[in-house]
Image 1 (tube, rainbow, N blue to C red):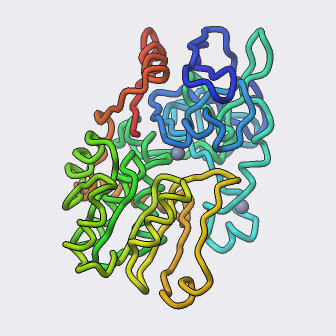
Image 2 (cartoon, protein in one colour; image 1 turned 90 degrees about the horizontal axis):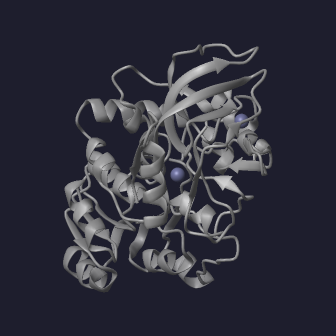
Length: 358
Ligand SMILES: [Zn+2]
Ligand SMILES: [Zn+2]
């Protein structure tokens, strides 16, 4: 079957190959025909080495499709079911799961070092234990989450990571209060979802901060009340908060420099929410005096910071009610030549649909 493969960490171009096979099917496993996949920023971070990932590998961890086959012992799923791919399946039994913090379950990472694919040249890994830039993938049953019939595959794919992560940061983790001021630094798919989450929560001002003009324009369409470049952020803070700083600042880049900017632009007693996935050797610094004296709450948020299945369900409900716009996220595209070309090639002659939400 066809798949888009990254041969070595550090390359920016995927090669589309037709000799890839999904492996590992058996008891407890599900084979899914991928019908839609998104590109999330973490895919790029794995490709460039910021996030640890063995190579060669198939990127993509936002996907949705149809179940083709279920292994022995799998209950609640059958061939033909429409599912989204959850890259962080909950075991249901560990202390994190029992607390309702299924986004902190580590069970899904246990297989991260096991190849999900092979080709005549050898083993091929799937990013985050999934790898959705392919026609078929074999995953644990917990990674195949049924979706309602009225949810298109493309929208389900986005809910599989970016939308859940951004919405959850605003709703579950930061719990943005109605009437508050919010800044979102980094406006790719996750940042735009944080903007939408802040709007759902009733924020009065939502300032989107991004160096890329097209992303600023997109943020305005998704509910930001204004969008500024990093150079203009200090001025926006002065105008909107009388210099005090924002009630909530979301860092959706994953770098210590932007996290520090976010910290400094959070008001005393306000909330800094760290959403971006960063590198092991990139250290965020605060001094002990400011940490104590300014009483800013630093809240990291991983994968929406709450029960994952509940977050999926809420995203579907908000979308159905017209409170969040997911259709426009599908058509919002950013050019990344090495990846877009490969995804376009993936679509040719297959039933796969792709969207890029950076
Ligand atoms: Zn667990
Ligand atoms: Zn993601």
